[in-house]
Image 1 (spheres, rainbow over the protein chains, first blue to last red):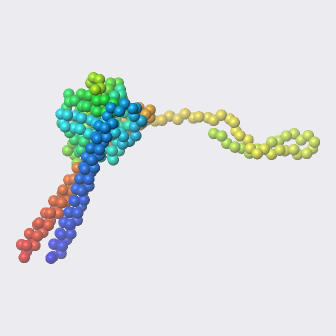
Image 2: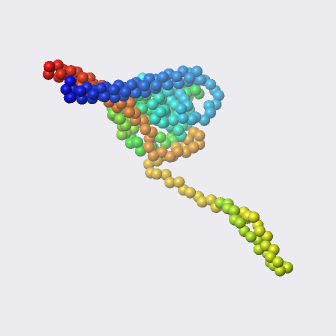
Length: 191
Length: 97
């Protein structure tokens, strides 16, 4: 075996090892997120209708489930926005309104996992936020692309509003430079 | 701010003797001054009233970027190149023989 053959074989093995490690990690992240979603969904369904006043939310506490049937989006919503939380669920931004409260309910999610279907969302789509205290229906009013520094979108509103945030462009590899915003307005009484 | 200050009491000399009595300590009783501080909010920030009453200052929207797609692509690329090197390496060796 020549020296070049040996070097080629070593490089191939290193690449294969690194590639398999990367794919294993990606698979772990996906499986971990799905397992977390399944466990939280089961807990949520079990606790639904519990009228007892919930204690103050801390990061990681389950809030409910978001559904956008037309684009096939269903994901559990958890308090917080840390990388660990957003890896496993849609995060509710601390300091913004909770579903059922007046103001701006702001949720953030990864564009390559839970909020990927948002690229197909359009005005008029129905969004349901299922919580322990009822279901809240929203209608999409608009979508927009903003800079990460455009924090006006998460400011409190006078009407009951839902704001969804994810990265943009959807096809970007790595940390995308912009944010995709979906703005929806609550309709009717909670069910 | 309160501070302790050690002092000696000094009295008039009556009978020709020093009758200074040492005092262990005196406590300053002047009222504490509270200086108001003004918090400056950077431009392009948002004050969000929290559900718990806590206000937070934000200058950026949450980071919703994930490296999952990039990691998957890099992984697939590495595996693909590795197989390519193995296959073409074997072909090259076979043709050389």
